[in-house]
Image 1 (cartoon, rainbow, N blue to C red):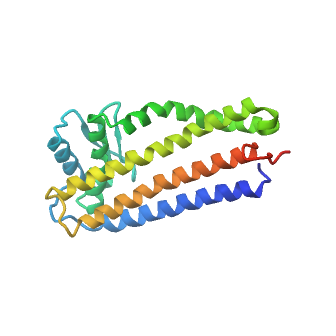
Image 2: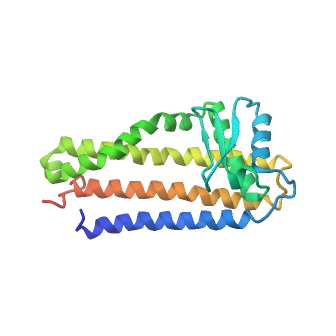
Image 3: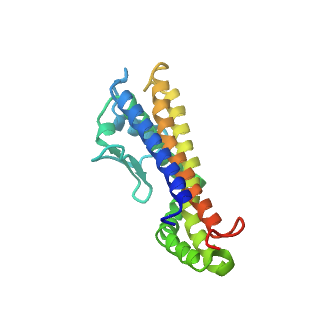
Length: 235
């Protein structure tokens, strides 16, 4: 593996996609964090208003340190907004806050992809931590021709993390869709400000797309390396 140029090529593609997506998110959030909304609402105020409008009264909104650390915790029903979102009155703050509330709405409505992703977290963690070692053992044994059981077990374990990144896509896209619908039908943002919020959310979505593509490429690499698409590289 360490001496396989194609392996590093695959890893390089994943890293490049991640870096490009991250750079776009940083550029978009930095730009629109400098533009204050005409309504003057903070991210926290917007979050609480959307929650109340959707009849959700058991979700707490709190500030957490860090940058882009915003998330919704379904286990404690807590919406955690980073400091630059919680108390700021920018287009970035409003867009991100509305997106995270989208997850709270998903939770309240029993959105199936979110429920599956939440239940799949421990499975994906096990697959991520153990799968690569099983795959390497399978490669040492000759791949699918030498140890088919070990090969399929390793790929299956690794695939749990790939499936997690796949299921994350509709969850995040739907949260952004809900956010934009809410913002479009409220007075929080003007018609001129809405494209800015959409740009921020679309940029953030690219990080999840990059994560899925990267994980899928690595999975396909190992499937090829272990001989699922023909002779393994070790034969």
